[in-house]
Image (tube, rainbow, N blue to C red; front, side, top):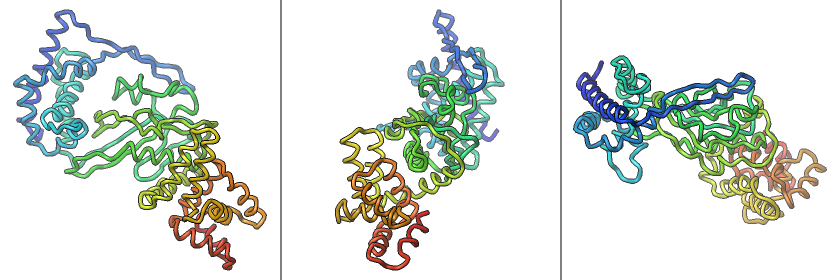
Amino acid sequence: MRAPHLHDTLRRFCLGAFAVFTRELEDGVNLPFAFEEHGSYGRPTLYEYRPLVRGFVEARAERLFARVDVQDAVADLLREPAARIFAHAHEGETRDEARAVYRSVLVPLLVRTAEGCGGFDWDDTAFARAYEELEGSLYGEGHSYGAVAPLIGLSVGTQIELGDGIRVRVAATGELSAMWPEAAGLLPRAFGREPDRICVLELERSLATGTNEAPDAPGELADAVTAIRLATSAPVAAGPVLFERLDWRPYGIRPVLPIAATAPPGEPTRLDPFRASVASDVRLRLAVADDDPRLGDALDRWELALFQSEPFRGEQLRHALEAALGEGDGAWAAAMRGAALLGATPQERGDLAEKLRAPGCELLRRLLVAILLHGDRPGLVRGLDEALLGVTGAVASLQQRAS
């Protein structure tokens, strides 16, 4: 035990809260239970009967805040700089460190202890286990952060790595409800029961000691969804929410960005290793769009077009093509450059130039992937112009670099 004073303070806090809750139960208040169904594709459905202590505690947490044992525990925790990363997710727009530490550290500790006790019959072993986990988080070498979002629209045969700690994998039975009991009402319809609704998109990171902010999981997972859509043309969507954990303790539940949480029309597909490698490369290169407004505009318009019908879809795609390759020279120049990039023969380039006068989502998807994999859009445009003017070998060189 690295902080005996903190252990004693937090134990008194939990004992006091248990006493309050026990009196409520003796006065006739009911502790709700959940009858949970854990579906798993190709396996029998499992059922679990469990007390909903988290909801019970969190509904009464605000009333406990003014107690002396709570204020003592908060004061001790505020002396621990490592507690700030836990508080950060709960501060909101108004900075109130005391209340944030209470919500992010003390309430979860109370919930973890109550879950270990199966209710509010005190068990020192359950508290010791919960406190040990907390102390390991506060004084360990850095933190382990994770975020998981349900993923629909594709299936995988094995875990797929997309780089930077982001992966697609099959969800384990009950993994979300085990840590977040309220997850059952936040999952997509039929999640866990259909072949294209059994995966999760996961982000895992190691955070250095002293870090007080978690990664931007909504933004990073949204980029991963965009990369998968570009690489596979699948109707992929994540969410509608993502579940965050810190040191394997619940940290927060946040909405996924709307563009990534909405499933476009289309047929589900399988993410094979080849297309997964393309998705990984594309995801890494999406960062280029942050410094290239025209490329960012083209990507945004293409993705929005997936959800639109004609004539709005066609208009979005034409503007996307012009943003990607027009460089102020208009739609005709963009179409010629796109044909030069994608076409391997004069006949193919001629056909593509005609199609790019009114591009479809699939053709523009191929074009955007080629641009992203090239990595230097302005340089690519200059090279394509040289190719169109007849510079020897320019087309082959550009196509090889983008492949």
